[in-house]
Image (cartoon, rainbow, N blue to C red; front, side):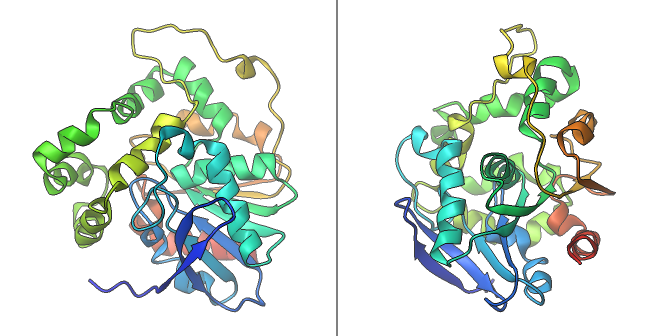
Length: 295
């Protein structure tokens, strides 16, 4: 299939090159869209044309994904490096403050960018991505969330890529991901996923986001020490935040919304009838929520 969104190859000051969809009038307010695992800018295929009517849109394929740079080593995918990419992308276009949007791992990057650089993030939009404090807390305190997150440990297994090579990327896709969303909608993009995952180093780059993360995922029968930051007050978000949440998400349990108001004083929460991949499962509802909130 032909991708209707042409990309620019942009060399960032962080040392990586990202393929970036650039859409809309540069004179309009800037908005940066961060995809998650296991996707690309295609996560936003229904949002880019909509947002480009009123905003200057940047939608990168993040480091490790598709044909963007895939630096070697797990440490290259630490949160600080991902956040640095976001800021460097904005800097490349001479953008100071921007609206930041993230889904899944892109949402994690968006949370951390906004937490650490509130001077740069004017507004934050999060789609099915947990607040880092709540996520770590629930991995200790909510057995359902802990059970639903055991896949993270599997993704951190350094032998995973060898297993995928043995069974083939297509078989792995069919076995692992199709059950997590509408099968027909997933299959409509199947060729895109296979092509992007087949790029040299792409699987390792994608999984290195999990391997580099400091999040602790205890085994079901494990009782490790709690991270110290869970015992301290967590600073509240300093900008308006829109959260769009698919209630049928099987990876992120309802506990991810418990206590979110205390961490996000200026919160708009929109719950939708969808699974994890809300951007393309219910694009009309997502666009409507974003459009109403941005105006």
